[in-house]
Image 1 (cartoon, rainbow, N blue to C red):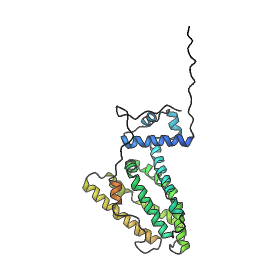
Image 2: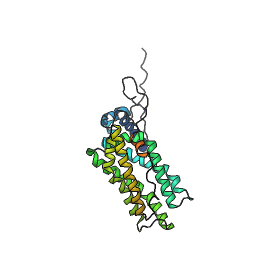
Image 3: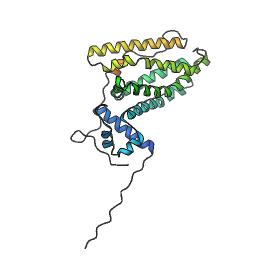
Image 4: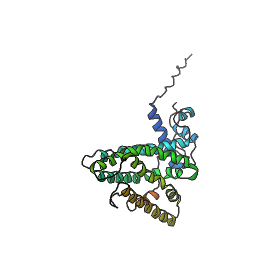
Length: 258
């Protein structure tokens, strides 16, 4: 009689928490872009990632929490790519500020195909609480580097403000004040609506640039907050092709891990 071979024990794959969290975010982002945020459920992410429900809920309590984490990750990665601007010893404060803003625009433009569909969900009225949570987290990340630039400018006698950190927060709040205009721009569909929304938002950003000049006691036109065509590039961005799917239109399932 032939004896059955002993059953091999299941090998449990253990990953570092940050690695597992990052993989779950990657999976959620892919699904949000391909199916749309509204058409993706928590169970979709669980199935595509090949994890248990408990494993996912250990990191994210809801779909909204995943969207918030994606926005925070984008802000964090943007800051990493701004490091050379912050550390360049040859830059005076105003040049550093404009280089900081220019690089930020470049990064947003490059990431627009990814972030526009995600942010379209954030700027809907029913997600206003989520918007404020994301805005608060982004401000917490962006205030220190901006305050550092303003502090340098005060030391050089270029900027004039008694409170660099408070001034940085005030400048960043201008972005939050544009909520309504951005929401209307993201909701635009026809060419006429897109053109009108782009012009309105670009004019508002130019006004914000003038406001920053005055806050920092600079001549008008010193701070270059927006460039021609930037708003339209963001508004008309579309996600590129995602990874190939298996027959039937469903994402390839990953090996189940806990």
